[in-house]
Amino acid sequence: MQGIARKLIKTALREAAKKREMRYSDLKKIDRGVRRHFHDDITVIVVFLDSHLVSRSTSRRPLLSISGGGDLAGPST
Image 1: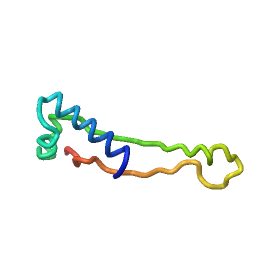
Image 2: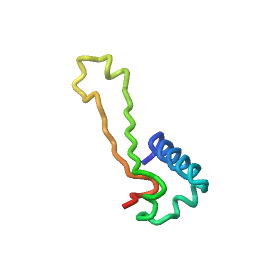
Image 3: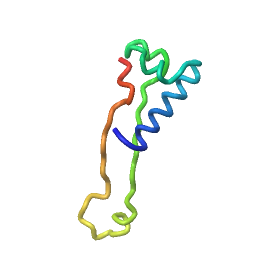
């Protein structure tokens, strides 16, 4: 996972750590099963719209591209 999705997840985890009055680095060290007590599951969906493809209505290429990634800190099962 790269770019904006990573930044959004990191920002959400930093906010969760701040609310618990702890550091982000300490939050990441918490075991997955215990971490659920510190923050909810996080899902990030980033949609990039290519204005050149959208404006070319005769294009046979797909107008949507989907990429997936996981939680930066791992699941909190």
